[in-house]
Length: 223
Image (cartoon, rainbow, N blue to C red; front, top):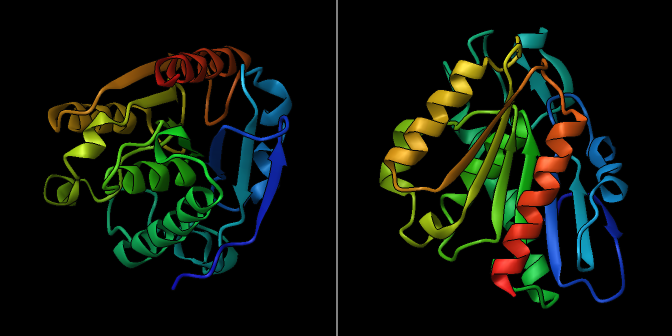
């Protein structure tokens, strides 16, 4: 049984009806996106989980040990992908999903969100669930191990809607890589809302408002 990752838990109100599991980027930690709790004005109480990625050596950073969802071997982040690390992080996130279900949150009321590396894990994990989730927010990221998607993606996961957002000037995860991932997802039958912004590898105010509107829309459709 997978041990539950250390994580920050914040609730926007009593008796949360939804959970949002939000994964940080390379070298950050769960604290990175805690401000989202106050930024997003949602119509119902939400439990936010901000897990801390395990610490591991990261090749691209000279083997320096930092929080990372998987290793990155080179500047071309979609080359020589760390399949074992990606799948281990998938198991970690699935343990968090199972925890929320055990607390009474329906799978279709659970969102996976992530920035950069965290977004890659959110996407990878959501496609392999045997039940639909409320949605996936994949920010400034890409689809890892795309060659395995067709064989491993589940039929019911195609009911999980995806929000993808990317900065046109992103030099860390090129916007073209995000767009190629979106094309791959569309080919596989997923519904993808794509948003581009005049920014680099970050999140801006307009993106936050688009995220808020998208989540609200998903909640309204569920209720």
